[in-house]
Image 1 (cartoon, helix red, strand yellow):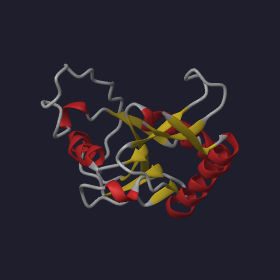
Image 2: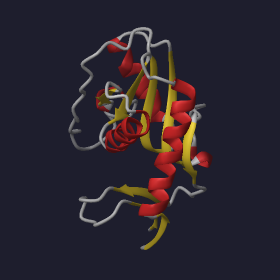
Image 3: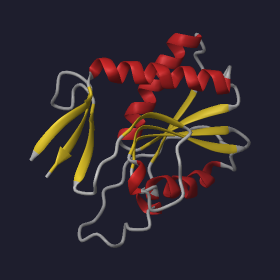
Length: 180
């Protein structure tokens, strides 16, 4: 197994900063916008983005929720072992709001499709945008494209993109490409 670092701590910080400035440009005061982190790893990224947005804008009430899509996936019954659900924590309505889905890696697009099904339980959004840290653009199975991208990675199916945050058995945030 080989591992290649595609984002180190410094590059990751720069990318998150750039993504936040793009969000500020398109959403101004965030009064009609909510951030939804896809559980589990997208929520960790969403927390970092919300914190950086607060620092950059001095707006304290940027709404953030976490969305579990486990039972909305089209493959949850196909697995041999029972799935463990994560927690959904959205304590606000998304009715008429601009929703920004945040996930760490966009691969086939199936998780985002499941997220679009799941979010309807909380109201009908005005629109949905997608922010991803890593876009694996040549692996898409559904016609889903991100609005905001940290980095595009051309990886084959045998390779895996791994996003690790400090505290996950490592000292610094990093993104790796792992080949089996």
